[in-house]
Image (cartoon, rainbow, N blue to C red; front, side, top):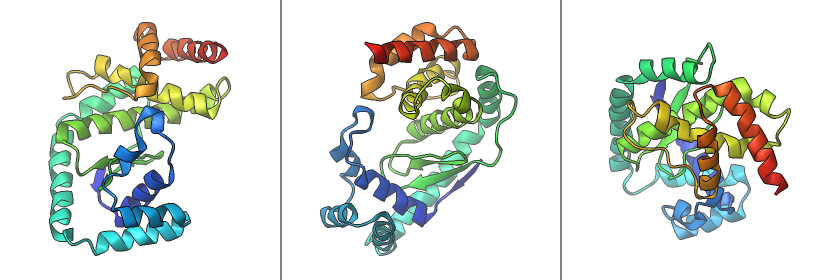
Length: 227
């Protein structure tokens, strides 16, 4: 896995957070954008995404503390890489075993963001320069579980669930990290506020067989939505 910084991706992360005013799974919007200057936040909110990304890009390039921030980013890359390399082989091997999958993509990039939220896609994700190393290690594990799960089980889940229900399941199941990867990680995966009750229910369904757990979890989510 590669650790990198890309200023455009960082800017996109800022914009995506600022332009989505919905509380993300119970997290508070204001706390997620507190690092963005008020004037810039208003500009991001009133402009289309492409224009907003350019505005943030310019802000980052001309930041009065850019030299110190750039050093922080570089050090974050070095330190996280050193720590992750200690467990990467074990983690990937166990991830494949736990999810009952045979392969794992080697072409995944971890980008550093100077925002607070850490978005992801099928072949990349982000960690925040402001988070502690133990926290970032947990974020890496969290996102890799997402990526592996969606790669192998998304289509199957969408035969039964909506996209929204799939997102809920994806986030709620990360308690598995606390059980199956506890010896490799330094912090617990606590999940999002809105999903705490569901996490408790799903944890009771976890018996170590991922495919059986998935079927039982789908039934639980469908039953929950009927109530």
